[in-house]
Image (cartoon, rainbow, N blue to C red; front, side, top):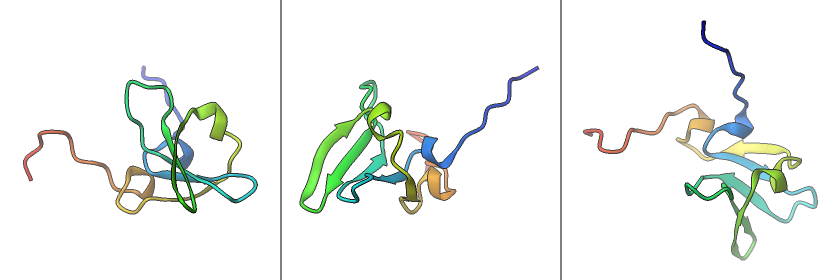
Amino acid sequence: MSKKTTVTLGDLIGSVRRSPEGTRLAVLWPSPPHPARWIVTDRWGSTGYETDEVVASWPVVGAVPFSPAAGMELAEIGAAS
């Protein structure tokens, strides 16, 4: 019997969270194998990557178009187009 897991928007690649003060956005776009999976940006550009713990309390505000968080799975690497 397989164990069911609940996947939330915040767990899917392409999820977008906004910092509580409203000055930064974080997009879940992992760069494995590093634990900092969220690319963070402010109005001037990228501020680097953050870990799940840093952005966990930030509300989910959207999703990158055509990403898994927006409902479209990414193609497998090496898949024919």
